[in-house]
Length: 117
Length: 113
Image (cartoon, rainbow over all chains, first blue to last red; front, side, top):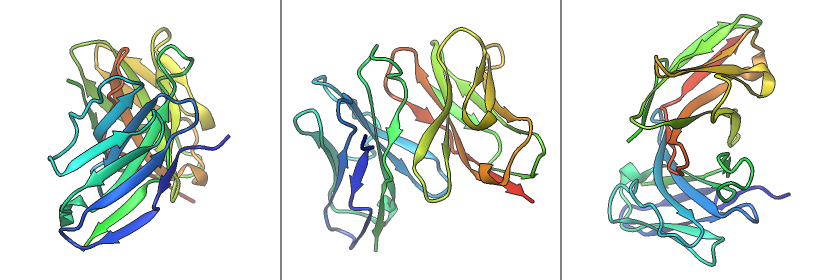
């Protein structure tokens, strides 16, 4: 079946502009995660959604970052007034609901490479 | 809160040699532990995971890891590496039953002919 997809694959923007990054999780996966991968810094947790529960936003670095998940499926990560330090690869992952067999395993998308000039 | 430390940022090794990639974690509660691999120009994929039970966990491509609770470690090993194992390897931790996953900074394994 189809894996996690993300769009766009690359995004170049100017400092101060807003950007939206999209993630389509694997069908039937109720958990969805966003991470940021900066050069040499591994994966930084940003936010996760699980079903209809309130999202865990504890990893969002500032109030310029927000995310939503519509209909329990597609998610959009929005960065307002982008800064050069926001340049990174933004990764999305999804997983099954708890207790639904191997729910701990996350399936990652290919990422969106964001460059803020 | 949980944290992960990968002790080596880069590990160069010759083909067919053994390798160990080190990972230490910190947590006040019980945890799940993971190793993910990211091949060049590809997305991350799960290599192996420890949830409970046997402390020696076997994964794909001949890799294995051992959970050591007393040393809070989860080192990844392979007895004989191939050129194709060249990739970045990430150790990750999550509290038991939780969703939030904390990743280490990654170890770049470079296998030389």
